[in-house]
Length: 356
Image (cartoon, rainbow, N blue to C red; front, side, top):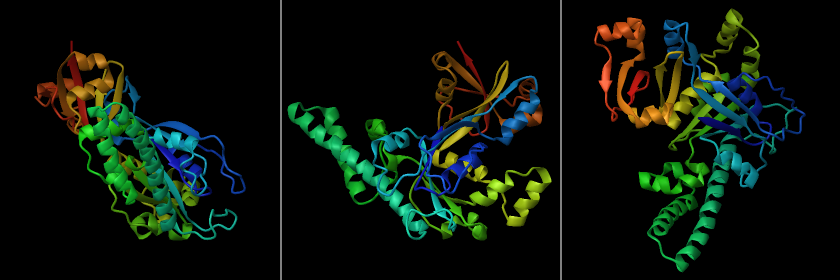
């Protein structure tokens, strides 16, 4: 799973990248801006994983991972630039970093800060980029169908015209209800307005209370869209502290948790993914899969051979295993369930796959 951070210049994208990844990339207010994206792969913090690994101290702990990419600031109206679009299209989810803080040493791309306007502008640019792609494909498709009719081409044209109508009304694709077959037809387009979108608002240190009530900055009821807030300046200072000093500093500013926790919770919810665990001979490992994935699909996530030779899944909730202390004890107590390939894996399941 990967999220790409993007937005207008001087909004705090690299600061947020540092907060999410633990990187310490220097941010200079007078810098003209980075040219190459920053990228980092990070483990996903999970207390369940930490507790399970304590049962098996001799085994390696391998948490799920998430990739972050921090793009250079984009000028107003320039998201449709092909090189910039390429990065955004490759992302599983998008994170728009938007400015809501005052600092005369850090010039804003407009004369004054207007967070709702910036959010709406970015969403309009995303929709426009998709509309350009749809219109271009429809033009080519019309020419292809004039030469040779095909049922597949007709189906593609039908769904693209439906999407075009939606985009022309400024409605993102993520708001549409698409059938699985329609989803499959448009998958290769990697439409931006179909991707989960998190607006991360960088607030002023005098308005830290907005972190708990980001809807006061901008309210959105769009599907697969979330509004979060953070204070890059203060949180960067907090991360320089440890132990009790960090705790006291957070309490002083009324911060209940750091950005990474809020972001991961929102990203997992928007991506509609869950975590399951496996305990092998040498490792305790967590895996990220789509919600409502079957045991067969989960097996394929680990290895195609396990999926092909699937016999059954032995399943136990993580907290039950933790309470009993081992698989052996769980078997004695009859706490391990035998499930078939159609079983829907639940968040927090510990699964042992039997396969031929």
